[in-house]
Image (cartoon, rainbow, N blue to C red; front, top):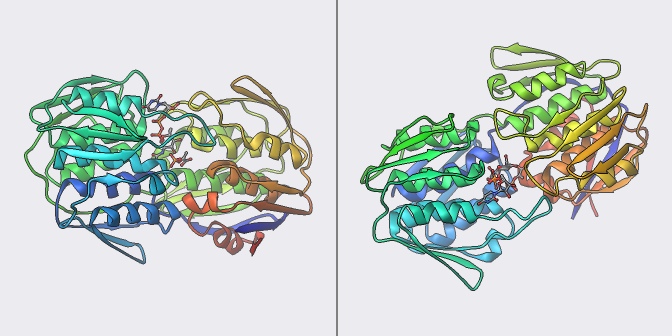
Length: 417
Ligand SMILES: CC(=O)N[C@H]1[C@@H](OP(=O)(O)OP(=O)(O)OC[C@H]2O[C@@H](n3ccc(=O)[nH]c3=O)[C@H](O)[C@@H]2O)O[C@H](CO)[C@@H](O)[C@@H]1O
Ligand SMILES: C=C(OP(=O)(O)O)C(=O)O
């Protein structure tokens, strides 16, 4: 198992290229099950989750190849409509194969994902929506088993905004008979990217990016090629890296329009951020100012940036209240940040962060993907040595994070534990 060792206190300076988005790549890979043949994606990051999704597709009979930024997925010989527990347990997004499988093959057997470090994360809304499209769904020995002779369009109102739920239904409805209307749909840029690729394959989807999406079902889809959108959470993480070290970074290949709520909060905290033709330039101030934040579905402040933003608030001037409204247990980073000298108290769904002048390096343990990122960020600002163990969480969603940070001056090394 690897750990990251960070000597903090270095002001970051330089350019970082942002990778393609994990949360866009995974649904795009799942969507290949809808159309037999070879799909080509560009700007695909090398991440553990991408590898896990490839393994899952291989398990079903697909072939994949990931060379440089190009990923091809050939789904011509898919014959096993199953997502086994061994793969699903390492990546919840495996549930994204449920909708495409039942739509194209009329059958899917997908392990229930179960909870994870950030919350219970049920998939009841995915199941309910598929039932409304006419699938028969049963839970058998820990697996969701869905059968449908034919899916039929329906009006589906989500009780709660769900990103992968919206994506699963978009994919299933694309091959359903008639019209499906998704109300209270997720509006994330990754949902829009998926809808764009489905349309490129021949689907008829309108309204993606708004709360109401309309899907006119078609009888078949054909493979195409598509460029993955930039990772807005990775970009947000590096904005915080500049802010927390008082540094100056240029982020290439990112889309400011996908990050407005994050950029606004960081500007309120004192960062100077300006648009570039292909990215962002950011300067961190001498000391940032405390700002409150509440997580919301897009276009609100993303839960996937909450931990990183909290790391910045730990050394900001004043008191900030950070409220987590999406996941019930997404504060696992709090005790670890406190081990680094932060002053954070939990009060239900809120964390009260009293800014301290300096953090101090210490050994800390990563518990999930974004918690790990927040500990690395805190380590960059802390005096002395911070060791972040269980780095496999980071490798699930950040491409070469340690290398990218080293290239802009951070003293960070990866060592085997
Ligand atoms: C691969 C991917 O894109 N992952 C993202 C996706 O996760 P994911 O799609 O799993 O998250 P959801 O948007 O579904 O979850 C939002 C909330 O709805 C609840 N819920 C969801 C589905 C359901 O059937 N029942 C239910 O109760 C969840 O427990 C959670 O409290 O969106 C999250 C919220 O922006 C992000 O943090 C994740 O990075
Ligand atoms: C929670 C996340 O991912 P996942 O849904 O894949 O667990 C994340 O990207 O922060």
